[in-house]
Image (cartoon, rainbow over all chains, first blue to last red; front, top):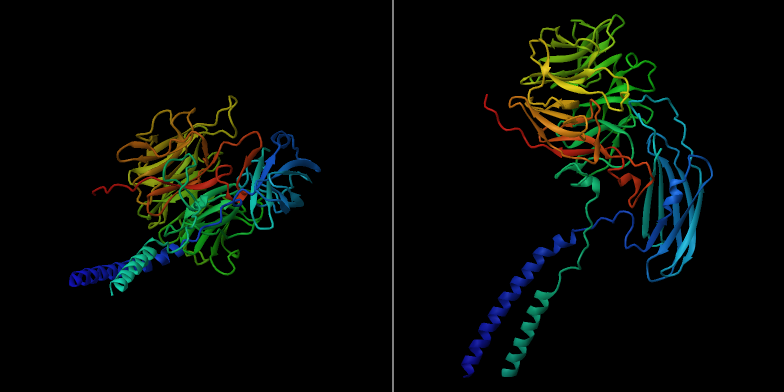
Length: 167
Length: 399
């Protein structure tokens, strides 16, 4: 009886040692490729911690004049209070030869969890003059103005809204 | 002793379970590819790939000889970028106004344009050579008064204008010099040119002296240095863009001259014509329907197919087609109804392998403000951008 138990234990031990060896080898082979998968940062922010809501009717009433205003709501979509949220507005032209983008920035000190903060930007929306006369073949259409709004938390989470205004 | 054996047995099973069931690493979230770096569906068919993104009026795409980069104009200046992923590289300053670009080697670009706004379209354009390197914005002028350019196997053939309504052809191999000036004069001003499949002849669209339109088609033998007219259009017809030399003869787009949109709101209607290289009266291109409205054509690298941008009829949306001249068959590559494909004469280009075509397209602009959830430089459909559209390789035709 004792011999039978010893024989069975020895066979089981040999099987387990072999299985263990194969498992260790399998894990060694797959570990590096998993570690090499570095994800890209998702465009326009991650996690939807902050949201941006625009007044579309107000957008439609913007005119290519100085001193335009735009209200937007910055929403805290996280479960915690947010502090020092940077809100930026970049006004630029569809014509990439025009390098007079205008930058505006405001900081929202606190947004309670699930709450909203209202931000008003006053900005110039004047189509810049061409620095040199360009032939119609290069830019045959009137360029559209682009508003790029971004809310960013100190931790780097951000949300972007890009508005393309018709000429 | 039985207790020790049992303990060892239990520990071994535990070790196997721990090793086998444990994850080697935490799960990693893999974000989707950036739009400009992979396949997208902008409405131009499956397999379409974006080659650019963001604002800017883009034009004149040109693939590098190995097909790994593509150059194009943006609001007049020149950039190139990898056809895979990677950043753009600027070749000219933003005040430069380029009209056409062609590669002559993997790191050398020939640029037809002007350093500032030309006062006269025909007189002030020059041909420049630009080389990739530390000072990539430096241009070297090869020739002044250049009318048109066409890539050649050894370099670039270009047409030079003169005051006497004559043109001449010249060859540069990209070294910054004119390597050969062909002595035979060409009557009239060359508007566009391209080479035959064997590279030994050129076909020229010419505005004859005293004519207001580009109405004459000429061939020029680069070995003999002589040319001749093969056809001339009657009335106020004009040749649009660059004539293309296929293995089945010469094709070109032509129609009634119209400087603006017609009074009924429709755009001018152009047709594709065919003429044998020996010359004669042009015929409508075989295989193309009577109602087809052509905008631009480009011959494939092997000379056997024509990429065509046009509309099946005046009310159809613009799409990309491939014409097989030997089979007289026009095949729709895209069946898009929502995108505006750009119809400029130089706004399409075959990849060097002949398996895809680059076009420029955007969605139809809205008259209301559009709100997007991505930064402007990542947007595709809202602005004219480049797309690589697979067209399949040509089947081997026994000779």
